[in-house]
Image (cartoon, rainbow, N blue to C red; front, side, top):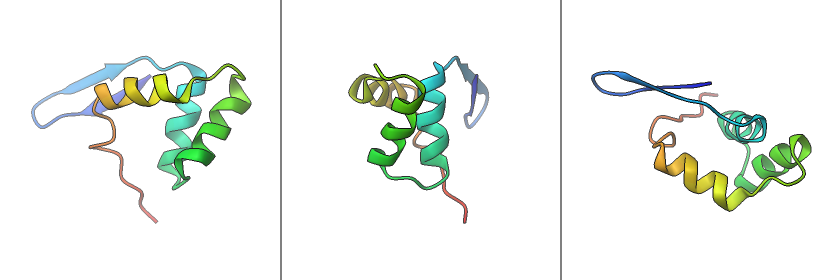
Length: 68
């Protein structure tokens, strides 16, 4: 489950385990390629293009910030 904070509310999105691995890797500062590898280790049939498109439509990257 991914919780998205919006300006005036919150949204929730259910993620597949491979999508969660992809987002977690990106959140840790991984490149897109490294994040895709993390997702592929969870689900060998992971479709990076489809997952990236879905995550863009959820607008998660506007809120994702690497703190380090």
